[in-house]
Length: 322
Ligand SMILES: [Zn+2]
Image (cartoon, rainbow, N blue to C red; front, side, top):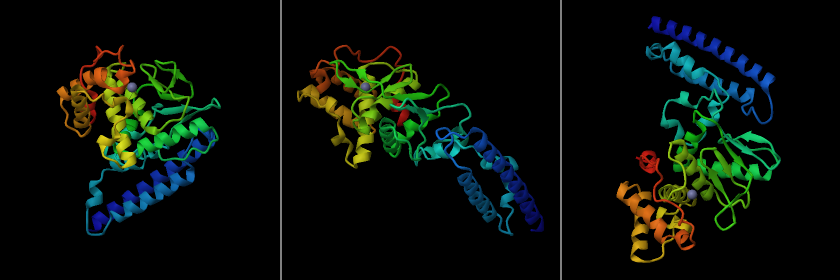
């Protein structure tokens, strides 16, 4: 018992030294690099977090156990490393943390979602933090991202987008032109650019565009009926979670079928997929039905879409929601 107590004490000393070293790093980096848009975690909150963790470590050291000895110093160091980016990713969604190794959420090389406001400033979206600037576009996009992050479906997607190895995704107040010359929100495939200007319509529509980015991330972005219906399913899932309504009554208007026999079949394919009955045939039926029987089809919007694009090796929805 004495041995374990001593080991415990030594470990706690090592831990305390590491905390002190980490605090120094934080303080220095806050002083050197501070800018109101780049650095979100204050030194105070980092220290408070470390103190709380230190208390937790002490609670792991009852005198009659050797449990603490089993935690390797490497493991302790891993948990105590302070990186200002850690908190923001842990807050991405209540589900995000369970997705994998917490190391994944430490961000050394700029994997981000950024927002460029109407004021021309580009800032990094930090899930769970408040935007305290004045730009109305940034404010709106920020709160829509927060809403989407708060859902299980949306949290998974946003978390992957911010942890991507490649370039940042940027949201701009530019306006894109849709098929009828209307202002639309869109995601530009391959450029990682959301053009979200124009009317600030609801976060469900933003969710739709986010899912196109997610498809792009997995290597099969581009315009096709299959990609669009998958985005609509995602949109419907986010919408049903946000509004606390069943999935089937969150059907976006573009998907509303003309009530022919084909349309009815197509609607049930949508509901089946959204409820998690993953079946490639259902997705095929939905993509074909979208081209032929949707509201979008009746407006002539789906005419130029192929059912699947060439690079669609697998169905992202199956991958995303096994
Ligand atoms: Zn779309």
